[in-house]
Amino acid sequence: ETGVTQSPTHLIKTRGQQVTLRCSSQSGHNTVSWYQQALGQGPQFIFQYYREEENGRGNFPPRFSGLQFPNYSSELNVNALELDDSALYLCASSPGQGWETQYFGPGTRLLVL
Amino acid sequence: EDKVVQSPLSLVVHEGDTVTLNCSYEVTNFRSLLWYKQEKKAPTFLFMLTSSGIEKKSGRLSSILDKKELSSILNITATQTGDSAIYLCAVAGWNNDMRFGAGTRLTVKP
Image (cartoon, rainbow over all chains, first blue to last red):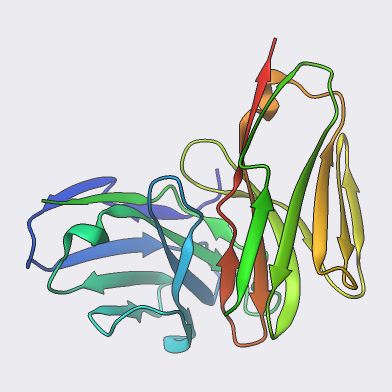
């Protein structure tokens, strides 16, 4: 039990739609990172937020965007969904310093039809 | 292009065996190397290795970082069925990103 929660657990969308995934971090964890994990692959880094500002970004198009709120919650928004967006989306929170020791949530499994 | 490569991709052993999992990396702004265990969904943190901490041990698990060879190994001794999982290696960069390998699926048979 990491203290990081994500919602929803599962989601089905159709191509072209938009989706918002939510993450609630541990209290006091100022850093949150989002990852996409396709079946049989390791997680791929989408972006990181620190104190509500984007702090690093992986090789994902602008239709992947995020927000972090003062109450340690965050969102991942994906516009114009494509079939290849089907994956497990993980968020991970960490204290501001030493962000690598992250605590992962259970993930949201997104299926795009 | 930066990359993290793990080997083998899968491994089947029997309880009591010792296993060694490998991770090699080519990352331009290396900050640290991490090992995670993923059983169902959420990866759980095992070790973090940096230039100032190249060897870590916890119970039956240990890990070493070889900065010269740009690689790391994760050893598990006296394996148990509960060790069955996917083991992920990741490299964190100074630009606040983290690159994962594809993982090694370990199956421990009774």
